[in-house]
Amino acid sequence: MPDSERLQNMLDKFEIQEVVAAACYSRDRGDWETLRDCYHPDGCVTVSWHSGPVDEFIERSVKMMSSRDPQEFTKHVNANPRVRLNGARAIIEYDVILHNRRLLDGYAFDFHTWSCYLDQVEKRDDRWRIFNRTAIYEKDRMDAHNPREIPDSFYEDMDLEQYPLNIRYHCWRNARTGQTPPEGITIARTEKEAEVREAAERWLAGG
Image 1 (cartoon, rainbow, N blue to C red):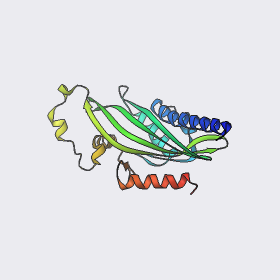
Image 2 (image 1 turned 135 degrees about the vertical axis):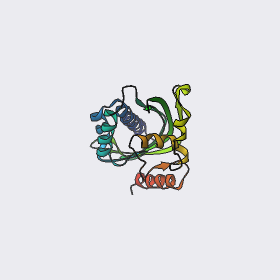
Image 3 (image 1 turned 30 degrees about the vertical axis):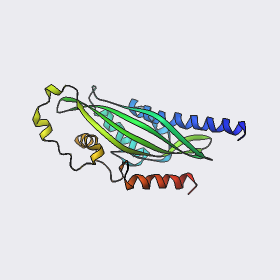
Image 4 (image 1 turned 90 degrees about the vertical axis):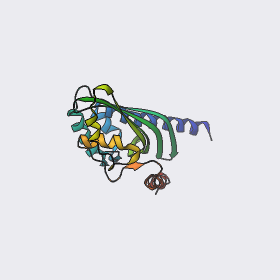
């Protein structure tokens, strides 16, 4: 491969990693204009509480953040990006740990969710932006900030059976705040994950 082509590939991969990181960071910070600029206008997002157009994702995100207590926060930590290029299209996968502080019935809880994000990124008008983002969920956990203050009755009222085993606490927390899991939620090591990956590969190849 000529040096000029290698250099362009490196530049493309760097710009792709920058835009997907900016999408996560701006979502956590409530920087909605930057978040919107990370996606193509026809972009889509599938996560644990939304599956559909990016515009709707941003609208719902704004509502969610505006209703939070000042003590509540969300932080996405990204690592291990893997980028594959094919002309003006690319797929980037990266590991994500979501840290979430929530107040439920006045008690503080920390939720942690491990997932892999599979982003289809496209270069249009000489600019890389996200065309489709899918979160593939692996596992989660829930910890009381102060376990000694939580009464047993709090846990007795938890109904987790209706949610996917891998991320039951994550989905239960979302449902408590009015965000029910969409039909398109993707769990690791399932047929759904295989379908999502196959569709992404077809898209990358130009299909």
